[in-house]
Structures are given as C-alpha cells and as structure tokens.
Picture 1 (cartoon, rainbow, N blue to C red):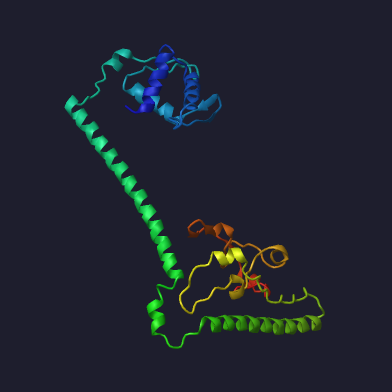
Picture 2 (cartoon, rainbow, N blue to C red):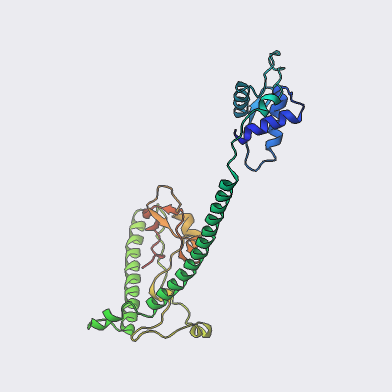
Length: 290
C-alpha cells in the first residue's frame, strides 16, 4: 500500500474512524503543511480545499473494503470509518531473517563503495587543479613552444614585436582620425541634422609597473619581455554615454557581451550572455579591441 494511503487510514483512525468528507480534506491539507515532500496537493474548492488524489485514494480504499462510504446526502456524507477487521486481515510479506541481514549487509557494502568513490573523486579534483596550474605555468614560461621556436629563423625579437604593436596602434589611430574627418565634413554638408561624429580618443598609455608589480614577475624564456594589457590592445566597455547613445542590449543581437560575471575562479565562465547588434558597436570607434 502506498504511504499516502496509510496517512488517509491513520487520520480516519485518529478521529474515531469517522469524518465528513470536507472535514477530512481540510485535516489532510493541514497535515501536509508539516511535510517536506507533500503527499497530496490541493486546489481551491467551493466548499474549501480539495485534493483529487486524496479523493481517488478514498475511492480505492473503499473499493478494497478497508473503509465504508455512508450514503448520507451530498456534501454531508461521511468519509466513513476504518474497517479494522479487514485492515487486520491484510497480509504483509516479510522476508526471512537471514535474507533481511543479507540485504542490510549489501546496502552497507554499497554505502562503503560510495564513500570510497567520493574520496577518489575529491582526490582527482585536487590533482586536476594541480595539473591545471602546471599547464598554465608551462604555457607562460614558453615550454609548449620551445621546440618550435628553436626551429624558426625569422621570428621577431621581443623588442621588435613590442615596437610593431605600438606602430600598429598608432597607424590605427591615424586611420580613425582620417575617417572621423571625412564623417565630420559629410555631417556639415548634410546640414548637421544627425548627431555630430565623435572624435576618436588618443591612445591611452598605461602607467609603468610599480615596485609591487615588479616583485611578482618571474623569469621568462629567452627573447620574452614583460608588457601590459593596455599596451597590447584597446579596452572596450559598454557604459556611460557610449551605452546610452549607441548600444542597447538586444535578445536578437548577434554579438555576445562579456561581463565581469564571466571571470570565474578557475578562468572563463560561460553564462547566458547579454547580446548587442554588431551594427551598434561600430559606432564606438574610440573604444574597440584590437
């Protein structure tokens, strides 16, 4: 017998074996409020709360002659008493004692295996984190490209590469200025009816590393140099007037937006990205990644 049907019989027995149907539904609802996993769910009813499942269970129990449904008028009929004679005659199968002990022993073995598996999983997670750190260390020290670099004869030196990046940024800024001047003339000729094109901002040169930064540096492979993110690229943001004037989040956008929430404890963290349309981002000529 289902556990919930045992609850039905228990409530009937506690109240002397006889209850009105509506009163029974209300008492059953009060009982379920104390359950973490509800045995029954209720809906509003013209005479109070009502559970279709409980009503069906009453019908099943009555069908098996464990209770008797009185023939009182509608809405005043009784959800009858428990037929103790029939209830006592129900045969409940019980396994032999040796088989019960074997089942308990097997369950304990399974719990032991589960505990062992959990321990192994935690150990594997700890080793994975150590391995992850080792891989990152080797990558930043140039271990993965050491053999490849040894075979190259036309690689830029670190200083040359740094100069090349700086020149590329300057050329890019000059091109932005030229495009802005063309757009400005077009805006003036068109009667200044639209928003005035915004002049690109000059390159931002980051402050040199301080003593604390220098103390955190480690030895780099030959021909490697330390530099700063602000030297290598322009940092873009969607805030302030740029966001207000040009960029709006759009569920149909084709360009996902990375935010601070994507910086997880162990690196990049995937989320349900906000999106923008790439056409709107093109307006941000003074703030772009390179």
